[in-house]
Image (cartoon, rainbow, N blue to C red; front, side):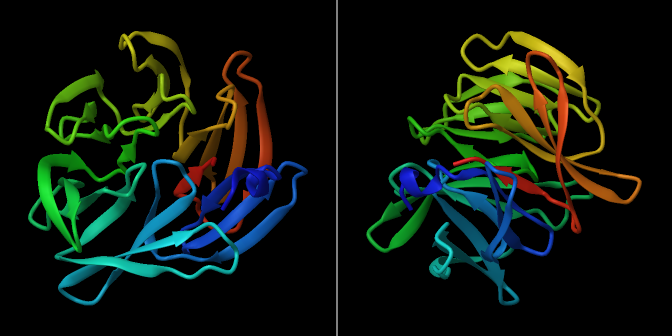
Length: 255
């Protein structure tokens, strides 16, 4: 799907019933289609990967954002896997394999390299059960480890810790900045020098994402039984209610 076609859209989101929606810049909301479970976006945010379970295997699927396209299987993996995502040229795949013995929401983040028709695991790290994100520009991957640190890792396994006490995170469009939520406050961190540039209260978040221009954050909030989506200007902290959704929204992204 080309950038020209996507220009009318302000953001995309997936609710807990696995329905993909598009919110247009003029405020109209459009139901796009049903997608597979535990969806994640590709590095360029133009495609989605998801999973289907058949008992002992997880089937990773791939689909574009087009309204009429359907998911196709990318590969099967043994066990339970979540939040698959492809790098910029689809040569690397990352997912989180569930650790069924862990009493906490931990798993194993695995990076696979495509070798002809097979995927070979090349990196494994214990991780928090949150979506990993590929860099748009390199083959680095961002994820939260079991110590709740935001980590940038290469396919060679070289790690760089960017922030601590992270429950969830989002990357700016240029990926020079990360918004890191600790459960009570949103911390705006420089990816380049790891300094904190801003901090403000944020509670009851389901998920969040940067706007396409990087000036705002989109927040999915559930409070007192209501599911709302807000836009907060990072500079002024002015908050705007965008819409109310009938179902909780665990994933927002902006192509």
